Each structure stands twice: as structure tokens, then as C-alpha cells.
Image (tube, rainbow, N blue to C red; front, side, top):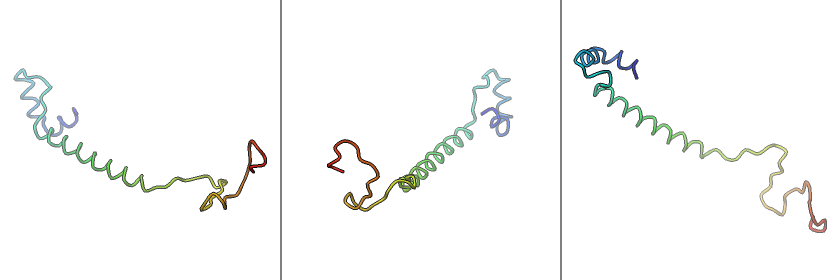
Length: 84
């Protein structure tokens, strides 16, 4: 934040330091820019989350893939062997 004050509001900052108001003064232009950046970041984050939701689950290549339970390949069986 101090870099922004030095770049954009150094004259105003010096005025407020020497007038006794201190360095807590932030020009209105910087407050507006800060709000705009926060809004822009929120919009970009929302767009990013929407794009991430379109990516499906990625499974390892060793995992058998099928359309339904009946045609699925059996790789192992635990418990009662009559059910396998």
C-alpha cells in the first residue's frame, strides 16, 4: 500500500504528514481503485470456479471403466467367494 501512496498520492501524503494528520490518510482515488480491484478479483475468481467445475473426475488408467455394473470387469473379490 505504501508503494501506491508514493506513486499516486505523494503530494497529498506529504501535506497530511506535515499538517499533523499522520500517514493513515489514503486518497479517495486509491480507495476507489482498491474497491475496483477487489470487485475484479471476485469476478475472476467466480469465472475460474465455474471453469473448474466443468472438469470431470480423472481416474488412474488402471481403473476399469464401464457403462454399468453388469459389464464391469471384476479385478478382485473380498468376503464370501460365492458372490464373486
